[in-house]
Amino acid sequence: MIRAVLLDLDDTLLGNETEGFMRAYFSILGEWASELMDRDRFLRVLLMATREVIRRQDTAVSNRDLFWHHFQALSGLDPEALEPFFDRFYEQMFPKLASLTQPRPVARALVQTCLEHGYKVVVATNPLFPRRAIEERLRWAGVPVSEFPYTLVTSYENMHAAKPNPAYYRQILEMIDCPADAAIMVGDDWENDIKPAAGIGMFTYWLPADGEEPPDLATVTAFGSLEQFYELVCDGWLQQISSYSRQESV
Image (cartoon, rainbow, N blue to C red; front, side):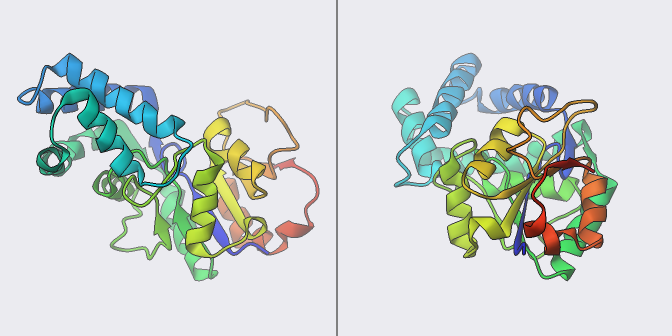
């Protein structure tokens, strides 16, 4: 029986065309940081430090600490001085990107129903952003932390690995005290959400693009829309999921 539901954020709980969103994000962040260093150089350093977090294998320190270690090494700037500067960015500028996203009407009902059924609910978004930025996007999605008692929201402060590293999922399960075979990962990204979660023994529910078929049926427990997953939760599917031995489109 499932005890924990892990929900991806972008293009799962929140409609977000990633390429366009990130382009706008980098544009306003680069302008914000231009008083510190050349805009193009800043963005190169930012991307290089972020890639180091994604490719990491040593999980001894948080993603936050690793990011700032590499950022400082590449830029020569002091992280202690920079973090308040970027906190102001996330407070003043980041909310302007909300118009590039689309709340999904079923997201709120899904989270509420999972909580009412007693499941531990985890916002399992790739932890490359500060908590402040993730909470802001949850607000855009209509499922803010102020209203929903999530067991865990992953961010670069509290995680020691990033997607698609299986260590990211192992850390979540350890933090919420849940075995892999009692958890399900729900997400749209096959490589980041489904494949690594299934690889450590979790159940998975994939949200494919229209007409897309699973690359490997043995990897996914079921697939369909977020609305269909909500209906499954309401119908008690998660209480019976251990008995499902075949993959299905719902």
